[in-house]
Image 1 (cartoon, rainbow, N blue to C red):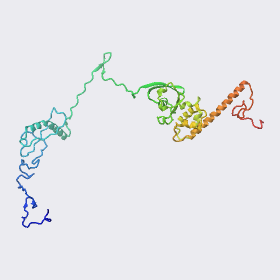
Image 2 (cartoon, rainbow, N blue to C red):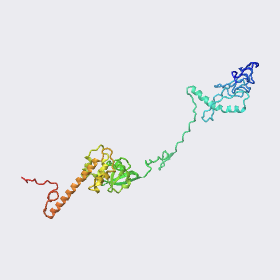
Image 3 (cartoon, one colour):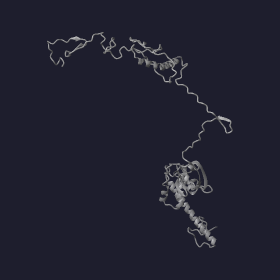
Image 4 (cartoon, one colour):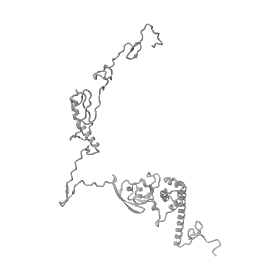
Length: 383
């Protein structure tokens, strides 16, 4: 409790002044140490004083060249010891060893002296390297010994007994670029046998057609059988060439978009119809041409729904499908007219061969012996 809260006794003695200055009256005891007695922590005095600070009287060693360390190199008065001179140790392993100064009190134990002698070799090596660097790098000792030279291979002998070049390990053969086996087979494409050699067994039919046989009509749009740009016919069946292993198609009849042309090299009716529709890129048209050909070969008069279902496997992302549907309708109508004309021509040839004249107008208003689509005589007759 402070003096402000407790009344002071007028009979109490006044506080005395001691070593610590003004002291509170409630203190029970004080300890005042005499100055210069050596008992003050950190004060210069007896080093064996238990109150002395740790490390009192320690003097750091001086670095430099000097005489070898001895037991009497350090004195009790704190004289700094010197390091060992630089010498070369023939048994050194090439590892640098930091030198340590040993010495101190005269009562240093024999064990510490033995340790000092063991580190003299490493310290000498480091001192020699430092001295060489100070001279500008002359005579710098190699930290690692040079490896011994490899012995030369003995000279070999040929079959005739003559000395030849030194025998060595055989040159490794060129490893195959693939860990999978390679095959050679023949593909019949568009009526022609095309040999394929050195092909990886997993190559797709699309890859072989484009990269090995040079038939770039089939396109690589997705490599997953979704877009229809790689459509070809294998034994009359429409397939995605990117999903068919080429080796499995050996012996089958393969038809690509290049094989749709006629014998004289002109385009087919489907190709001409698709070539006349407005498109932006035309990347999907080869696959659509194969699809339309496959549709019309089995269905000469498809409905609108059947045409849409057939083209659902061919993706077009720019032009759309209206132009393609119109082209299919035009091809269907053109083939229907050609079929009627062929039937009429066959009927006329059969009647002419039998010698019977036409008995009346044929369907369509033309006589039986008239050439189809030939215009009749004018209404006023020939003048």
